[in-house]
Image (tube, rainbow, N blue to C red; front, side, top):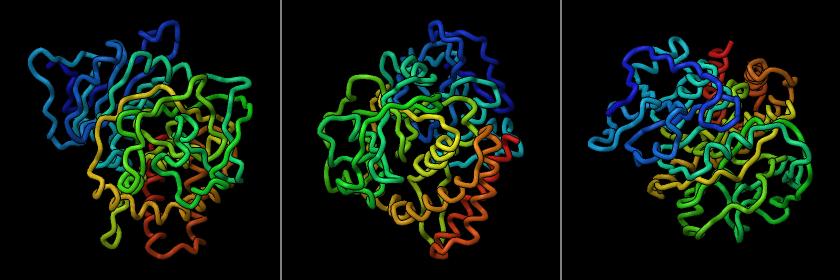
Length: 380
C-alpha cells in the first residue's frame, strides 16, 4: 500500500497552481475523516494529482486495502499522533470520536494554503464531474437563482427544493418547529454575490433525521432538479458529508463536538449547528451558500434506534441555540472571517451570560463556547 503515512509532522506539498481541474488556477484538496473502514474505491474517482487528507479517527482500527488495490501517492494519512504533531497546541480545538474530527483536516488544508477544501464523508461515493461541479459553484455569481423563505428567519429545505415529490421530506437538522406549509414556504428570487460554500446533496440513503426515517421510511429515488444550484437566502441544514468551501471561510466553519452532560449525549448536531454559525456570518458578510450538485451516493444507514437517541437532545436544544447564535451574530461587523469568528465568540459568551435557557442547556452552550474559542484562537 503506497500511502503517504505519517507518525510525525507531515506537510502536504504546497499547491502548484493548476492540477487536473482543467483551466481553473485554484488549488484544491479533499478531506475525508474515517472512523471505520470506507468503501475504499471512493478514492478511484478523485484525480491522482488532487491531494487527499485522510483523518484517521479509528484509533488504529482501519484496515486499508491490500492486493491489487493501492492508494495513490496523493493520499496523506494522519493518524492521531500525526494530527497532534501537526496542530500542536491547537489540537485542543480538534474534536475526536465523532464526525467533527474532520476539523483537523480542514485546519491542515488551511495551513497548507489550499484555495478550496472539499469535504467528503468516508461512506460516500463520488461520480464523474463531482470535483469540477464543486469548483464551478464557488465563484462570484450575477443574477443567480436564489430560494428565499417567505417567513422571516425561515428555513430552506435542500431536499424539498432540489428533489421532486419531496414536500414531506426534510433534510436532517430542519427544525420540527418550522414544519408547517406556511412556515416552510419559500419563493424563488434573483441574487448575486460570491459563493463561499457549496452544499452537494446525496442519493442512495438520504440524510434525514432518524425519527423521520423511523416512522416515514425511505422516501424513494431522489434526483437533483435541472439547472444551476440555487443560493439559500435563509437558514439551511448544512450537512457536512459533501461540501466545498473557500479557504477564507475556514475559521468560521467549525464542526461542533459531541458532548455529555448529566448523562445526556448531544450528537448529530456537529455539521448542522456549526453550519448555522458559518451561514449566519456569511449572511453578515454578504457571501452565498449554494446547494444541489454535485450528488454523491450515500452508502450507509446508521442503526435508526441509535440515531433517534443521539438526536434527541439536539432537537430539544436547537431553537435556543439558534436564538443565541442569532443574537451573537447580530453584533458582528462584516470583515475578515478570522476576525468575524473571534468577535462572534466574544458576543456568544456575552449573550450566554444573559440567557434564560434551562440550566443544563446553558451548560452545553458554555462547553460549546469553550470549543469555539479554541478553534478561533487557532487562526489568530
